[in-house]
Image 1 (cartoon, one colour):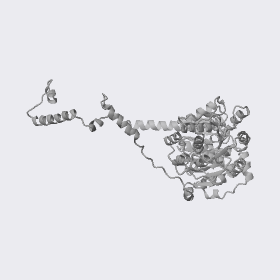
Image 2 (cartoon, helix red, strand yellow):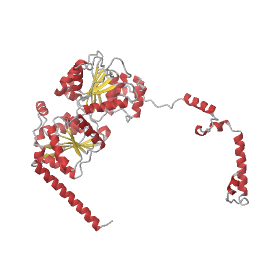
Image 3 (cartoon, one colour):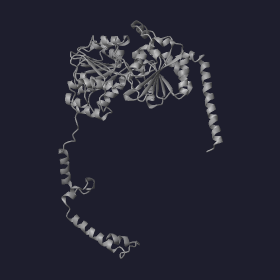
Image 4 (spheres, helix red, strand yellow):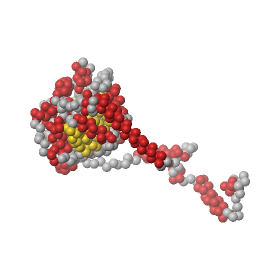
Length: 541
């Protein structure tokens, strides 16, 4: 039955006289279509989509098409040429790089250098391109080439500039694949939170590979199977070496992250023991930090061989993506009032990190702010590991708006999107200041840093003012005229912090001050509620 017959069947009416010409045209087209179906052309059959070839009538054409597809070359990708010595001066100025040492390897011009200069593993390149790393940062350009050429490295760059990838990538490239020789690379960081963050970066970049990576920190056991790469904290590693749970004699790559901290008095003995246990003749060492004090550099040179020094920007400087401010509060009482004023005015945009100088002050400030209706928590070294990890997860999720910290969280931890860092207590050194404020303004994002100070903090101000000036921040003229502290005074300030009035005492008589603050808050909220109710009564919806 033709189409028009179908239209006229079952009660449907169609006027054949009226549409006779159209019927004739349709039948002519139908006849041509049937003729074409009887003798299908090769091109037509080849054009039939595989998904519609239900009866497999075009297997030969499909096979031929697949063979042609496999034989066809992949689309070419423009590969950028490596850097030349003649281009180096302009390149260094553009990326604010400073290279010192004997015959320092040329920096990376682009990620293509990994393949053209060092024949990087295909899986490593795929994982790199699948991540957010579109272009190498200045520290990555300078440090990766030095490590891939197996040279000792001393690297300094601002916080949030990509230092972790700068040593993780060359380690994975140099390890390449699992080995029967046991542990070959070790990364040491001062805190387990930072160690875990490095471990997660390794897992991401080594995805799909058989390289064995181990995270060893307090509360974790040494794995029974040998590892290729170990990420650990100093005390836990020393304990494992002393109890012969780990053998470092085959280690060829040793990275000290946050090296300025690991070479301070508190960690120096442990770091020295780790270096003594790494006895491989081809051991290469790399030190990374946001700050490189002269004392740390001198100490590093005692155990490094023909090292290369890679520095990004000015030494001991902060990134220019951070807006830094100083606020005079008069006294400890004034600091608490200034903080509450900031909260009530809406100037405190979460997430916020708030630093204090001691665990006791962290606890006291937490107990003050928790009654102000804030989503606030506190983290310090005396809290159990499980609690610390839970707090970090909650802060990352946004459940916690303000996180009160000690120096524990000042180094290396990458919290994406931190809007504001508040130094409730002035840090004791310029290095501590740079690390603290470096929790914001990371990876090119904008951030703010606010430092409260009193007259007792005057000796610390000059160093902070210098950092602000180098970063392009506005500084009052009178601050620029402050006297420069002597080396002896700097040492004294680092060893003995300012004696401060208790936070609870600053709020008034501990419980009385809190009750008054809560009463004032409740009165303000009740007043606002009455105003809203009155507005609704006057202007009903």
